[in-house]
Image (cartoon, rainbow, N blue to C red; front, side):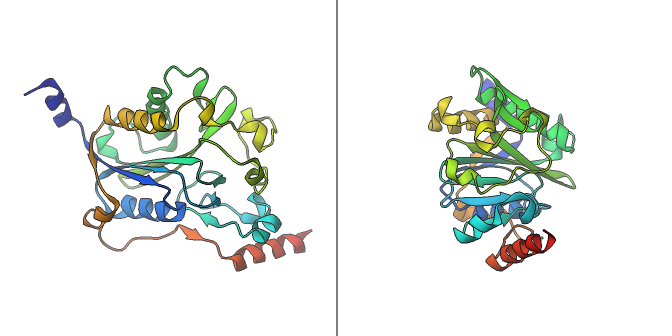
Amino acid sequence: MSVNKAKDLRLPLMNLVRLQGTPILEQLHLEERLLRTSSDNWCIVNDGTNVPTIVMGMSGKPSQLVELGPVIEDRIPVIKRFTGGGTVIVDKSTMFVSLICNKYDVPSVQPYPRSVMAWSGSLYGEVFKGINGFQLRENDYVFGDRKFGGNAQSIIRNRWIHHTSFLWDYNVRNMAYLKLPSRVPQYRLERDHTDFVCRMKNYMERSDFVEKTVKAVENQFTLKQVNLEDIDSYAKGEHLKSTKLLTMEELEEAMAGTTQNV
């Protein structure tokens, strides 16, 4: 048996799903389903989403996080996802990587947010090796003091998910839909969105990022490619569905509540 074959047998299996432009709502529904109904490890890579969409953490309040007037006027979709974390606006220039793992397949990681975050920071350290200024900083991925990757997590029983939205590029106008949140990382220093974030395209080719990410994951798992249409054979049964698209009525009610409190 070759050394590589022997190595592969020692590594836990991880299913790899590669998507191109899948709507972020569909991706989040898939992730929640796989986290709750599958017993496998998963890596989901989605290269862009179809339309600009705001995604909030599960406890996020629209009135505190988004500029409701312009969002309603421009009919920007707003999603409340099943994980914690902050608020982002994503589009075709956002790249997504999600890692769903069984606790016992990554024994070095404790099922706590800080431990999962440290592990992921090490993994992406391989992806961005050689690029000056990359680091994990207060739960963000940054080059220097500017953020390009935001993270969110959910930990249930013996499984957890860590997912990241990477700003390959962004539209400055879209950033205006987001309010400055009340809780921000210390290193942000009250900078607005455009001074706080940076574009990953200034540091790395888009295709290189995907391939290096897959390679970094492959160093810790044996990867098996799975097509989206085959997911049903891996994830069966009913499950809690907490990811939802907020209706325009809900957004209008939130705005009305804000107006009444003024």
